[in-house]
Amino acid sequence: MKKIQELLDAELGQAFRAAGYDEKYARSALSNRPDLCEYQCNGAMAAAKEYHKAPIQIAEAVAEQLKGSKLIGDVQAVKPGFINMKLSEASLSAYLNEMRMDERLGCEKAQQPKTIIIDYGGPNVAKPLHVGHLRSAIIGESVKRIERFAGHRVIGDVHLGDWGLQMGLIITELKERRPELPYFDEAYEGEYPAEAPFTITELEEIYPTASARSKEDADYKEAAMQATFELQHGRRGYQALLGHILNVSVSDLKRNYQNLNVEFDLWKGESDAQPYIPDMVQRMRDEGHAYLSDGAWVVDVKEESDTKEVPPCMLLKSDGASLYTTTDLATIVEREKLYHPDEIIYVVDKRQEMHFIQVFRCAKKCGLVGEDTKFTFLGFGTMNGKDGKPFKTREGGVMRLEYLIQNINEEMLKKIQQSRPMDDREADKTAKVVGLAALKYGDLSNQASKDYIFDVDRFTSSEGNTGPYILYTIVRIKSILKKYAETGEKGEGAIIRPASSESEKALQLELAKLNGVMESACEEYAPHRICAYIYDLANAFNKFYHETKILGAEDREARAGWIELLNLTKRVLEVCIDVLGFAAPERM
Image (cartoon, rainbow, N blue to C red):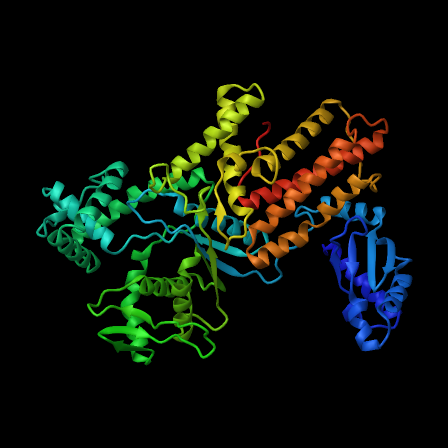
């Protein structure tokens, strides 16, 4: 289904041609003065230079041609050369009736679907999720859902940090505590236990203890580095321990991500890329891309157009150890082999931009992917406290993510219990649903690349540009539809009628923008565009609701038509919050 602005541009194109001017000037835009018009065309201003005429003359000639249009109800040429337009009420309602009959609400699927891998989440195993993991999870999940809605094949990969010294530290600490375990006996040839020798609680205590000790005890750190080396070179007992660490950690991570309504298709980590490293590095050396620099193997990735220094991409350190760069490149090799992606999107902290510039350039230069493969760096800003500094606990530490979610839910529960009577079980369930919306919308309504202030009071408010406000609007619509159903009226054959008031038309105009908003959000990886849209839509609905006696209307057909308008509004809002990664309760 074509966007309403495309239909409008087609009408404008015909009018420009009929008036004797090139249709390239026939481009409409939403008016920033809705009191004057709904859409505006400034093409006459540009055409004036080519045709050596006053802009107002061109605008008047085009406006005259538009006066017979069924799509446009009112058109005015305004000095110095604007063409101001309002859609006809009949054409707008017809558009919405076509939209409501479409399963996808007028949103077309991509004609050439791509295979896209989204790398987001990025937690380290053996460590609890904290607030620093929030933005990657929330933004990545929404981008994944938006791209899927557009018709692309999208694969979400958590990309675990499960390699490097942190594993050696855990193994070393465990060996000191439980030296009798078979994993530390090099002569052991039997089957290792199926059950892990630690719980997630113990594991989360082991790592920080080992990390702190390694900073003070050189021998201990040396032992951890040796354990890391032996793990990475295939020591059987340590490989078995790595398996336990992963199983215990991933089970806990899945539980925590589930609380955020975040799901991954792949639970791969840095360790999965390790088998690809030797051949990859050897190939880069053989083909002359990699060279020795102070004992390390590097690849030059700077370009003549660079305005700032881009250091060489380091593959192996002088001691032969790999780095994050190596692992990320090997992960690209694995993804190319297994999935042949058209695009890989990385949802990571924007401070990692230089690292990914190096990785992307090295992957292209060394032929790890084809020329047409697209790399996208979606860098996000920091979540700050009210003091404008990165969000911390009252004690100054980094807050665990589950505690942050718990705090939001508790605040939401208080507000729900204060606003209306509800049994404890339903109130708790509703608080979790609304709390998640508050948390996600509070993040996603900001442009991803920008920092933002995390404010629990504002995010959980039912007024203003917040998740709970959007959900209150949906719940209000559900309540009206339920009451209508209880009257026994069927409203069979009812359609959305031409608007009979300014607030009704304003609501219809917002609904008609859906496919354009979804398309731009997909192209720009921009959940904040959907947030801005549903906030405008919710405002338009609530104004219409307060000015219109929907169920109290005497005209049965008008009442049925408004119910269809409400049904469409609810569907649009629900589609949008679904791609943002949250849902609405039945009541609040």
